[in-house]
Amino acid sequence: MQPPSTVSDPLESPSSERGAAPATSPLGVQSFGLTDRGLIRKTNEDQFLIATLTKAIRIQQSSLLLPATRRGDEEGHIFVVADGFGGAPGGEQASAIAIESIEDFLANTLKWFFRLKGAEKENVLAEFQDALRRADASIFEQSAEHPELDGMGTTLTLAYSLGPTLFVAHAGDSRCYLFRASRLEQLTHDHTLAALLAERESITSDETSRQHLSHIITNAVGGRSPGVRAEIHKRELRPGDVVLLATDGLTRHLSDEQIAETLAADSDPKTACERLVALAIDAGGRDNVTVVVARYEPVATTATRTF
Image (tube, rainbow, N blue to C red; front, side):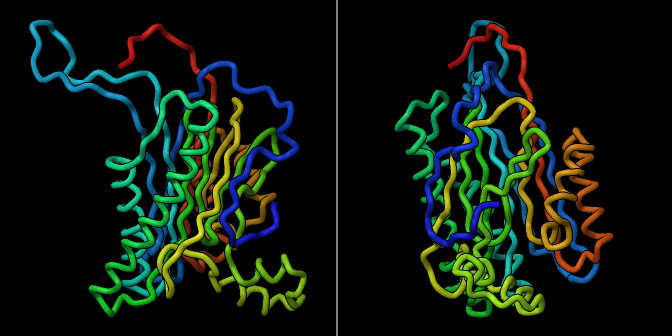
């Protein structure tokens, strides 16, 4: 696990990635998401999104017999989890606003590229930073119109893959993991007071104190003060990689070792999601739990016409 940080942090692949062979064939994605209220909470303040972005042309009329829609063979894949806070209905509202804002950004604003080159990849990172800022502004706009929702906010963790490149944008204590060759790596930092103090080596060793401080979010979308600081990462994917996004309803109950064992045992994303959620519930289910699992495997290439 990387040390926690609450500042915007564009990252290239770490030293362990140097010399790694890139994917030599297109990567296909199988994914699934699941959310559960848990055993204690009366409402579910978590939200998630799985979406595919494609180039497409809609045929209005033609003298030829053509399909109504023709899609290119390049696809981008987006995965998002959000964990709202501020109490019901504030938490539910905040996470929903954040997800809706990301959807709008993807449909109407993102200048995404199908064949990314050097500097264009950095542009994508900057655009996702902007996406989180837009979501932050949307929540504060709603808070201003509805004083009863004042202080509502949400974590937001977003993973976007295009070909073998993975981009991650993040704020809060939900997490994005990369599971590769039986090893689970946490890509994001926890933006909590406990993590911040641990980084500064000033946190008490008392478990109760650590648990209390871990609930204090230091960087979020919305909240008491505007100005989310989007943590961003870029990694290269390989065949067999699994990307996991999860809210803290999972990670408070399961260790990294338990998560890794589950991902290793269940190659099907749906089965893995169901198993992870069930384990979190069995361990107490004290919070809403949401997981998204995406598995990357090589796909055979075919000669298709793209637009």
